[in-house]
Amino acid sequence: MKLIYWLVFGFIAWILYAYLPFHQDEFLHFHSLAYQLPNFQLNAFKEGFGAYEKFFPLGLSVYFPFLYTGNLQGILLWPFYVSMPIIEAKMAYSLLSLALLFVLILRTFSMSSAGKWFLFLLLPIYIAVLRDAGPVNVALIIFVLSFHLTNKLAHPMFGWLAALCLSFLWSLAFYDKLFFVYLMPSVLVFSLNRLSFEAILKRDFLIKMGLALAGFSMFVLVYLLADIRVRQFQSVELGNFQLPFIKVLASPGDFTFWEERRIVLNTIVNQFDFSFYVLRHLNYYDFIQANVWNGLSWFGIVFVGLLVLEFKHANYKARWYLAAFIIMALTFLVLGKIRFGHHTVFLFIPLLGFWFDGRRPVYLKSLMVWLSLNILVFGINLVHSQAHESLRTDYRDLVKNTKVAKPAIVNFDSWNYYYLRNLDADHSLVTWVDLQDSVQTNRLFALSKKLNLPIINVSGSAAVWKQNWSLIQHSVDSVVVDRTYPSNPIISFRIK
Image (cartoon, rainbow, N blue to C red; front, side):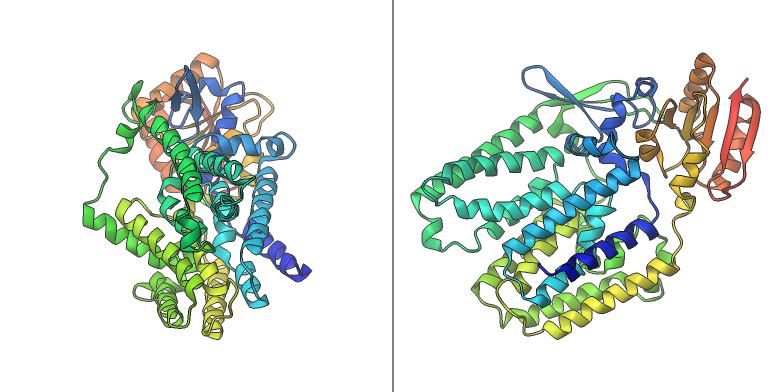
């Protein structure tokens, strides 16, 4: 592999870490590590300790960082977490994951130099693994590994081991995040690409694949039927509601059936615009696309057009990859609840095979023009767009003013850095309480008085703090407002 590709890899990774603001959801799936911190047991507020307790057979239970996300990411991050500052730990872990994924892709597809350049410039994969809010690294790696293990099923010596590995890895990816079940139909089609129908229909192959699927299905069934306990403290304390997990997932959504499908279709089309992947970091109204009707859809429309044109010249293997892509898109449409880049990035894996595995695309020049324009627009948006208001204070600056010599309660009244600061909590107790929520605010103030600890409040904006102050000023004994960061005021106070 040429060094130039990896230099580009390093440069893009550096840009994404240096110029994209952090936000708390990037660290959500590591949040179970915060449960081990000494003061976190006192956190009985939103996303606090024990918010999601997942039960398993034999009396086992695990505290999850989120409803449908297991604690695997915390386990994998732990060696980095205990040896580096939290941001650097996340960076090292994610870079290692991304490098491993790229090596696997290069070993899976027989790519020309054009295909390798396309891969190493494909920004959505970088953003999804390095900076997105959903854990995708394990699922992406297992997606590609499934291709290699499926091809080993026919081996007389290693076939049974490959079947067991497939079952285990699929179950592991599902445990990491339930979304992996959405990918399974496409994973199967993708993984069978290089096998003939005769090889697939052989009794030995079918038994081994059936064993892998049966083991995975059994794990999914046990997982869904076992209970989960949710202690989600918000405006109304829900207490301890405990249900089979499948019943929690079956709760009604916010949209009608057809509204949901329209949203998913728009998401699939829009995700071909690389700027789509940073909507949670940057203000869309600063994007070039905000000035164009249906702005985020045009790169997707052009890409689909290129797919249609290229299909006429594609060989059997390429069309099989395209089938895996179409099946994934249809699965998303049928099952719904697809919203973000950490859902749609998987579409690029079979598409890389369609365009570049063992072939030179007829419409390569058009595809590279599409890629270049996409990167150019992304770069302009990255330079000229502001972060969302709640993220305009860099985390490193903010933490300097909330890490104090004596213990304190560090409260976030808005979405910005709660999970991140919780992992970085030292001797402080970090909470997430909206001060306009009177029930939780009264509980927070009572805890502050009981422990005799000041509250250092981080606001999402100056306007949010102005509203909050009007509600809480009668309870405050003394207050110090740090106006160094006007976008995210930091206020220290004690309760009367």
